[in-house]
Each structure stands twice: as structure tokens, then as C-alpha cells.
Length: 443
Image (cartoon, rainbow, N blue to C red; front, side, top):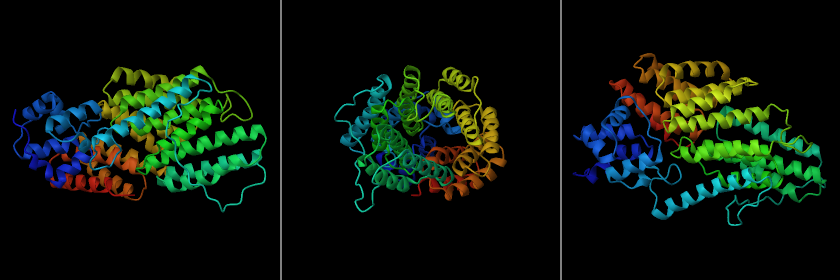
């Protein structure tokens, strides 16, 4: 079969759509030069009904194997579709793609080591974050539990600010460099253990903040695993597995994300957190059921992205069984994830119901989650052909301009733009253009 003219891919709009994994827009642009749905299906190894869903219903393509097949069928490097390397890079050499795969597998392997062995020994060649520690900050002469509690409170404060504004990778990085020096300060053994667990939490949040800012946070995750794993901290290891899984679940690697979520679950089941003064979380603390539910919802999301409705439904039921979220944020997070799962599975009514509930829970306190929900709700209305979707879309796009979350922009603005493009009208095309512009703006 005749291949696509290579000149087609020189167009800036086409290259931008490929970089954003916006397959629907790529297919629409192909149609404008006379390529039929049947020919697209034949080139990419999809059925014509799959191509039609992507074009008409705005269905995202997130499965890495399908993306690879599309890239190969269209005759473009896989790196142009963001397959096998870090997000945002315009092109990747075979060596860079291989390095990315190695890093991802190293992270999964490290989580596996610490999840299946109460105090496992990581492989010596596994990468970790390299720290340039400050030398001019005065150190305490001796550490006590009050110092560790101060560090935990500081971390919580950073987390709350990140929930409101997004990003904050720089602030977390500064905190990591400053407080890592405390490991050299004299302290009692129980204080040293508590400090290791507090630093593991800080590194975990720093890794997430890097991902949220569009950076690679895996080095922080690796260091957190070492600190928590050596201390036998079950909660800390499982918490890294959950955070790391969420960096992969909607970035083309849902199967790898599922492995991480399941490893976190295994760790909690194999080695229940001990009730001790130095533990990250006591056995009766609300944080443990929160993490358990998060890991199970993560599995549900991974299954939904991979189009496994039965498994996704089973995990959602399990996540809710006998547990009530303790606060408004967890209510909002649970409903937003359920809305995303419903949208992935094409259940628009359920997605709208969950998203509306999430908005009520988030209120005005958690802007990142609230704006993500508004974008999802706008996509539901647009895909359903409702005029209200345009108003919701415009408002949510403008809200996203004020946030620092690159991950939120990538995960929700591109799908919204794809849904807008699938509907007729110049106003929809203009909103789609705005959404892509904001999605690709550096924060």
C-alpha cells in the first residue's frame, strides 16, 4: 500500500499533534489531504470502527503498543509520538529510547525488590538522584524527634501549596538538599530511623512535584525507596509505588503503572505496617486505608486505559468497599479518578455524575484537582454535543493558564482539544487551538 507523503509530516501542526499524542487531530489532517478512514485503518493496523471512534468520539490512544503501530504504519519515528522516552522531547534517537526503557524498568525492579522483601537489598547499579548539598547552612548539633516533626510539617505545607498551584519542584528540591544533610547529624537510633522515613516522604513528594512540572522525578523515587526500604517502612515503599505509578498511567505506559500499583498492594499485604514510635503511619492511622484505596483505584485506572472494563469495575468496587474518604480532598480525588475511568470506558453519564460530585468536594481549596475536574466535565459535554461544553471548556482553559501543573495540562487539555476538533464549528476549533496552546506552554 502506498505510504503517506513524508512532506505531510513537515507541517508544524502535524508535528505538534504527534508530539502531543493527539492521534485524532493527526487523522483529521490526513483526511484533509484525501486519506480515507479505510486507508488509515489499513496503515495502522486498526479496525475502521476504531479509527472512526478516534475521529468522531475523540477517543484517546494511550496504549503504547497501539501508538508504536500507528507510528510504524504512518512511517514516522516512534519518538515523534512520544513512545519510549521522556515526555516533551521532540525526537529521540534509538539510544535515548533504550535509555528511557532501562530507567523505567530499573524503577519497577527497585519497587519489586523492596515490595517483596521486608528489608531488601537493591542492585548496586541502580540510579538515584544526585544531590549537590549546600555547605553554608548551619547544622543542628544534635537532632531530636521535634526536628523530625518539623520536617514532616514543612513537607505537608509544601504538599498543600502544590495542590493549590501545581508544580513546586524547585521548592521540594531545595528542601531535599537542605534536609539530607541532617543524616550526618548525631541522633538517637529511633530519631535516625524517623528521619529516614521523613526524608523518604520528602523525596516521594519531590518526585511527584518534578513530574507535575514536566521533569523527570524518578531519581527522587529511587532515593525514597532506598530510605524507606532499608528502614523496613512498608507504608513508605507502597507510597512510592503509588506516586510512581501515576506518573506512567496516562503517559503511554499503563501496563507498567499497573505493575507498580500491584507491587504497592503486595507490600501492604505481605508486611503490614508496624505500630511503633518511628513508623511513618501507625496501623490504626487513616493514612493506611487512604493509600490502600489509592492503589486499588490506580489499578482501576490502568485497566480502563487499557480498555478492560470488567477489571476496572472490580477494582473500583474493591476501593470503595467498607471505606469512606476521611476528608474533602480524598472525596474529590476518588470521584475525579472514577470520572476519568468512566470517560475512558465511554460512559459519559457516569463521568458527568462523578465529576460533578468531585467539584463539590474540592471546593475552592484544591485548585489543581478542581481545574482538572472542570476540564474533564467540559470534555464530557463536548463529546455529548451539548452547547454548555463550550462555556465550560473556555472557563477551564483560562483557569489552567494560572496553574503550574504541566502534567494536568498534558493529561486533560489535549483530550479536550481532540473532543472539540471532532465537533463542527469555528468556535470549537478556536477553543481547541487555545487548549493546545496552553497545554504546550512551559510553566
